[in-house]
Image (cartoon, rainbow, N blue to C red):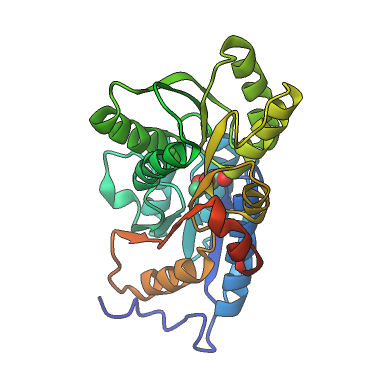
Length: 310
Ligand code: GYE
């Protein structure tokens, strides 16, 4: 509450707020859009941004955070590649009184005082929404009988991979215990190459897959290539539901190759900068600042495509 007494912030013409930001990597279209959003929003807010790309490696994120602490940045923000293993470095930040804001992905910690807030999506709900929209997709396709599902998981141990799988399973267990079954599930690390490689292995071990649930568009797009290489029609022979809603996902959907997309908004920059400023000012912020999202079916793809911002 009140001011921190430093009298300096981004908007006030005093010393600029310095934000250290450790990004996961550049694994997907979502991530590219997120990075863009963070960089432009920081500039807009008048902050000095120290940006570091961890190339999907936790050890790189830990060293980036340590270097932000050494440089005495005002606030540290990061999108943790996996949920566990952060306590030690977060304690180091706390010892130097540098507040930490999580964005996009959360951490698992026994000490809730180690971060101030999370700015990001509800991934469990995205998993539930994926299952609910799959019901519609199956109905539209006139699918009868048991449903054999392949799941392409995101990065092992990452919040969106854990929670999307959890939300999807929750609906499946509650409402489709007898008719739906996940027959194969493996990580494709949120990348196109991963999606392609794992999907071709799936098709060898389980040639009778009805549905693919991919934790992001990029893995879905990689899988489409594998499905086509196997002589099958994506969106027809294998129904596909993905998460994110990046432009290339919408293009694949408008071509009939993806059946439905659960949106996950990457444009978190402006909200993040607002929160960072408040934290710096010592104002109270919510523990979780959630993002607003929608779902899309194929018939909406062509109309939605021109207005997609990422
Ligand atoms: O869905 C995926 C990206 O954490 C929400 O990470 C993010 C996920 C996103 O690589 O495309």
